[in-house]
Amino acid sequence: MSSTVRAAAAPVATLPSTAGLALARRLAPVLLFSDNEPFLPSRVGISILDAPGRSPSSQLDITFEGNVERVIEYAIWWDWDVQHLYELEHIWLKLDGADRIVGVEASAHGGKFAMSGPDGALPLVDGRITLVSTPGKHAFTATAAEQDKTRELTEICCVELAGRGGLLINDMFRDAIGPVSAADHRAVKRYLQARAFAPVFRFGQSLDLGKVEMMSWDELAAWIPGRVHDILAEIRAEQPLLKAVFLDSGDTLVDEGTEIFDDEGYVIKANLIPGALEMVEALAAEGYRLALVADGRVRSFETILGGHGIHPHFEVKVISEAEGCQKPDRRMFEAALKGMGLGPDDAGSVVMVGNHLERDIGGANQLGIISIWQSWSHRRSRIPAHAGEVPRYTIRTPGELPGLLAEIERQMARARHNPALA
Image (cartoon, rainbow, N blue to C red; front, side, top):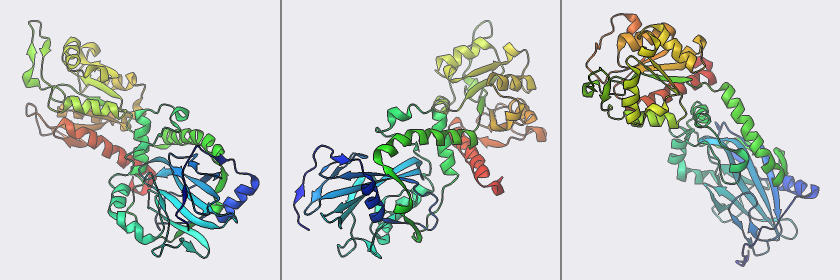
């Protein structure tokens, strides 16, 4: 092939005609997937470029080398990458004037790379361009041996980092998809974390791309935002998440040993436990719904928590002075549930975090709320008086709570995905 390269210019893609789609289908590559790859592509958008230009479906420039006369671009859609909702990868077949394949490029990790075998030849198997897809991530290589170069990173992505990206929103679809809530991102994370897998690097799963539903890129681009919203609707309906997080205050958020009272007995100043503010901010950023469920006087909490910037993060505040009762009285927890728009049947999807075994843990347990004892303080009993005061989980510091809540939701997701784990 000549080394002459025609530089990229303005986009010169044409809508594929019936004949163009037929050609794209006839020449479509074969894709090889890991034996345990859970995510396969479902649609392909076709563009045909008759001159160098910007890819219609990516930010990459397509060049024409030597005797290349046109390029078929395959924009390949996956509902899922192991790290995020939806994925587009690309293959570009470069054709000469007789529509013979004279070059192949494909995408990998945001870049575009020539696909060729060790001897520089086209990656052909039984006369078909055949490419290998990275487990879970779908980046393309010409040979299975090349996948070994990134094997360690791939394994980390498929296990420890599964779901990390939530819903991927790139600039191309940002306006069409619109805003997505933090809770939606969290639901997507949990969905994928439940489907984390240790990839095998045997690529015996074969897919003829010509048998996948094909359309023009414009048609696929118009379809994608609706598809994303459909998936989100399914996830919202099916993915179990914690519906609320109830937090105590004294020795859970606030260090009771630092409280200063005025002459009327109101707390006018106190320090937070180290990490408490960061914990609340992290939970709010993840879309958890927070309620304060605490014994004490309303004005004290407004002064302390408001002064530290925590107060606005609570959707509901249930204070014993206002309720006329104290924990472990079930009315405190029932008021918090009601304030969140929840009922008794939702208790198993709610957590209560507190320092007091009798009031916080015993009160939560009697309603079936998931109890989490924070053992940071030594000011209260650390030994349950009876079985009803035994916490479901224990943490030592506020900083441990976000990770624990994530693990609880992962357990919920795994149980839903695999009922044998329930």
